[in-house]
Length: 424
Image (tube, rainbow, N blue to C red; front, side, top):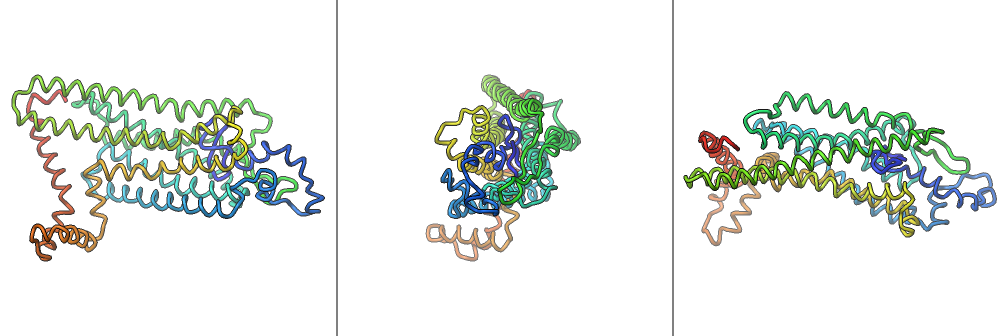
């Protein structure tokens, strides 16, 4: 089933995002519709879907106050998600030293997150609260396909990053992915995600329901319900379980390899300087791996509630209190899933020194100097710094992390010259 915004919540949980609001309504409330005498209540006029839901289920999503609250939530998600990921794109695009293989995958992931913000976080909430599809027949088919492709592509890219990190740690001197490999892998993953989501173009139909106002974008497999179940099962496995299995295996292998190398070096290295430098390199690798692991965790924790909701719904196992307010819990879990687009830029800024420095360089120079001046102004009473001193050292303060990163890179390069560290 599909969210008529262009998101699929398929027959089996993750068919892309979720079951159509309209489809769930008409199927789950069919018995209620029989009780509702449209001709008596409204003569020849159509029935507003929100009115219908409020009359029979006291559905909170049919109330303006609920719509206003979620409008604020989704607006914040779109604002932070789009602006944060644009900062990532600009930082990587303008900084040549950041254009590593892993960061090329991050670049692609940010592009996907922006698409999710623009499609899933806009069409879905609007349709969830109006209960009708107003975007035309073309978008009825394409929006779901685009959203499904973006979701598949995101998790495929996370799996590709884990493979890249595994090859980098396990085979440091060879078998690493190169830039040309990454530039080939990214479009292949995109094409595969499009291929997996392609059936959604043909199964989304724009329909009118007799007696109800408006048009509804619903998933319609006709009499081929068996095909729908098969497709949903395949999509769940390919889109979720297989990538997560690859990610888990890779990061377990990375952790085992790093810990073993650290123990071996502690026994072999007698030179304290080399030991210190190699320890710095190990900590840098661990910090990078920790960032990517947290990216995967954030993605899974954002989506798992939405996936479970749809899985239990399709199996008929939703608790009674959730089943009674299916629209409300559906939009709550969807909003949580959409937060997956905002966590990655935050993690980059917190855990990646180079990206953090690149983010700072996006801030206008006057604003950077003002921030630095305020920072030193707070310290002025203790350090006796004058405003002129603060102005002179402002660029140094804000670019310190860049200098630290260059120092680390130089130290690692010097350390790599030692035969003792070639096994890393």
